[in-house]
Image 1 (cartoon, rainbow, N blue to C red):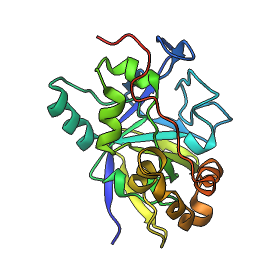
Image 2 (cartoon, rainbow, N blue to C red):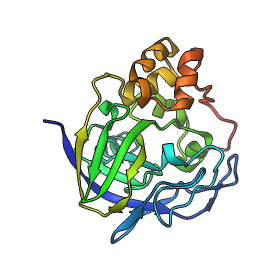
Image 3 (cartoon, helix red, strand yellow):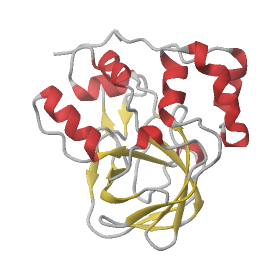
Length: 228
């Protein structure tokens, strides 16, 4: 029996001025009441109606249509940071509960609510905008060390999503390439990159190219930004 969970919160954002590369970001996500339509987005756009992408060159598009982060991981960070972290704080569209997102496999399919079907595409890679938004010294290093990055998802079947909707895992690939492995390989452990190729067609083209090249993302864990 595959695991199940639920949508704790649906979050959308509007363009917010930030001291980062694009100058604008959609990272300020707020919970919304009622149902939100989710469809396959164009390049640089979000899959959720009314949601903003501030840096379309780096975010959004079909492979990053939806970003999910677990309420359990937000709660862990609340204890670590000693401050409240409302749902949406990490820029996630769906705050989930009951699912271990780090162990979800690339290509894993979820049915959310009645009609929406999503597929896991990979981990969120932290950026300077995230560091600015969080106002925590050493944030990118701390987030990377924790290695619970949340999951990006592709829209396979459009539908509506609302708070409280069940999330049912309806298909899990036989390979063992999960979000946690992909995150570690792409950030701190490039020796793991060849293992990502075991995901086959479930590996996004950009990640496949990095895995074949044996080169992960070059993260600036101490970005040149003003931090409190």
